[in-house]
Length: 131
Image (cartoon, rainbow, N blue to C red; front, top):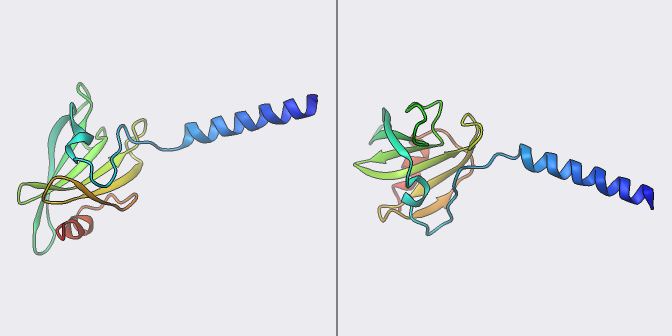
């Protein structure tokens, strides 16, 4: 009986450790959700502009209100093509250097595809243009 309890306690400690190490965004979305639901209430800043061959991407970032408006503190980064948000990359809420998920956004402002961690902007933006 003691051995069983000891194993259960050990398993609980291991599972707790696994869940605390897992990267998680501040918010997440599913296909069909409005992209704006990811960034509502956050402070937006302009980050950079990229020439992606046939199109330009204006990159923005979002931080919690009061955090410095720079890429090191951004919990979401997004790419606008022709003024329309087409890509949103989510970073870990506790460690903004870790990419968690990338969302491809259609012209309708809805999430159309989840592509996993990808912090590049041109390739995901070109894929999002089909939506």
